[in-house]
Image (cartoon, rainbow, N blue to C red; front, side, top):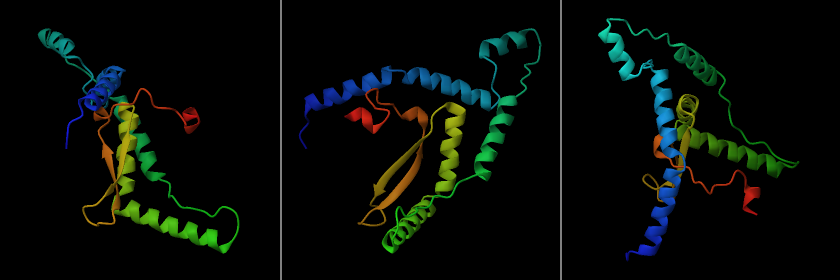
Amino acid sequence: MPVNSAVAKEQYSRYVRARDNGHGEFVEKSHACREFFFGNQWKDTDLALLQRFRRPALAINKVKATVSTVLGEQISNRSEISFRPRGGGDRNAAVAQVLSKVFKQISDNNQLQWLRSDVFSDGIISGRGFYDVRVDFNDSMMGEVSISHLNPHNVLLDPDACSSYRDWE
């Protein structure tokens, strides 16, 4: 496959723009939030100073208790997704029933309940949580929906992205 350097340069410049448009600051803040959640709330310089004076570094982690409570609420209040017919008629009801079964199959195959909890915990601890939804052809040549959980530090937000489809017009 021939290399198109103009397309490669354009792609790289878009990457640099996305990277330099706040991603580094997000990663730093996210790392600090994760450290707070796991109880590492002291800076190394402060710890060294306390050790020099033989003082304990006390950390009362109220963040972890609060976030753990919210995560438990999310798990206990999970919603079940189903499709309902719009309008009347037996045909719409049959389509809604089939869509509900297809979604249930996709959800079960991907263990979506666990993924939803992982993405939610990323969002509540670090500020962002992401799904990766693809059509996977490893098990079937017809393709299957594959849903996975992405590390929010590895996802760059597109600075040109719109907030809704109306912005495209």
